[in-house]
Image 1: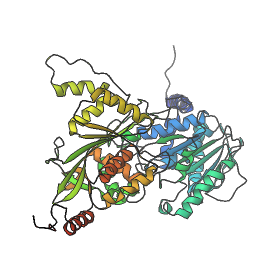
Image 2: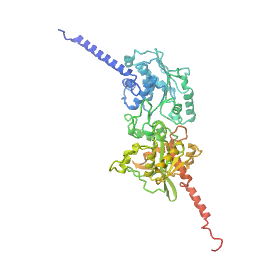
Image 3: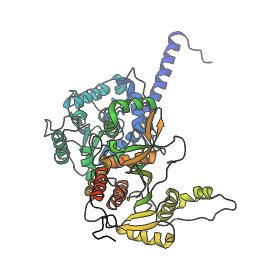
Image 4: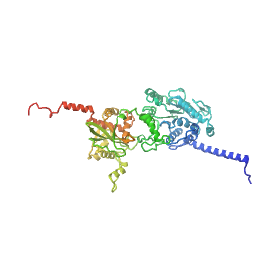
Length: 565
């Protein structure tokens, strides 16, 4: 019969049992953190961050979110060698420095079994990379880390400039154009290469871009297998992120603070889970009221660049956003303009394909009216869609009302059906279609299907001018306050309707550069140029000049007779 333990024996047994449980817990944690993941599935990096978060931020709770997981997913793909060039554009406060310059290298050296990795890290100022090297060093020297991963490597140099381990790995802190030109690594980590305050200094920005394009890649030990990661918020439409992405070699993970469907991100490893316009990326850390405060403090230009990752020239480029005049319509109702228009036209920049890697078709509708002789033009509708030429037109169900039928069938419509619907809805009298390669085919099909409708279909030749010149040719209409967009009052503020804001945003960002989103800009310039060329949109001074000329030069019927009749 076994004698029950008591006294020192019982205490020792309890200690042994606790030690065994603790070791079992360590084994489980090592297993979780050692998972390298696979394409589309998170591995152990997020577990590593959870476990060691308390070492760096003991007084700040760790707040998780899918935006953080998306960044982890792509860094794990870099670890596995699936991605060798990566640009990550996220908002300030998204843990980018801690993630890329502290936790991820520490995870690779330990849980991922890669203590031989050599990192060369850059920022716009060296004190930032040295700060992160200090955080990195502080983690790997702690008892908590050594207990879990002390067997993987030993630090032989622990300075903040270049921590070195006994497995040939190191982490070197540098800056744009900084010292240490002889250092080369297996991974280059670029964290905020631009100083936000200097983002608009053309001299500083141009030199930083030149360095990134010409000198940075020379720091890789192996150009074929080495990885380059650039992470930060956008500061300008010609910043380092733009220059790297233009090479076509980089995977681009971009997470706007507020979701915009026209900038939907899908990388092949991950897809933005949001579907509704304005959905927040990390509401657990940045709730709606916080984002509203950030917008107020920064203003539209800085917010668009740093938080939406969509920079534009301050106030807009050729067609500035402040030039759009609000046309007030009732809030919370269907769009009712409360007037008859003298002319309504539709303008189509066509493309017929359902593949989102190709350009979409851009549609705008415009109404012209005259008030005390002054011409004004109002944006009545707009969209961008990836559509086949012709879709399906299912049979109408017995007793089904026309609007119900339209709602049910519209998901299967093609470009021609959508154009017919918009022409009917907006009461379009003239439909303009740009005479690009696809435009001829679109016009032929529209005339075949709807040639007897009450709107005229015109094929418009844009001429020899490029897109930039065409935008400048109607700039004066905006500057004169002749172009309007529907807006509604909300909390004592005029808010443009969503479709109108999309057009305003694209016009404001447009600079006529290759690769820009410009379908709605093309549709807008086509419409306004056509109306301007046909004197539907005359300037106030032009109208006055015409009236003076007519007064001074009467028509033959108004001139006095030379002979009595």
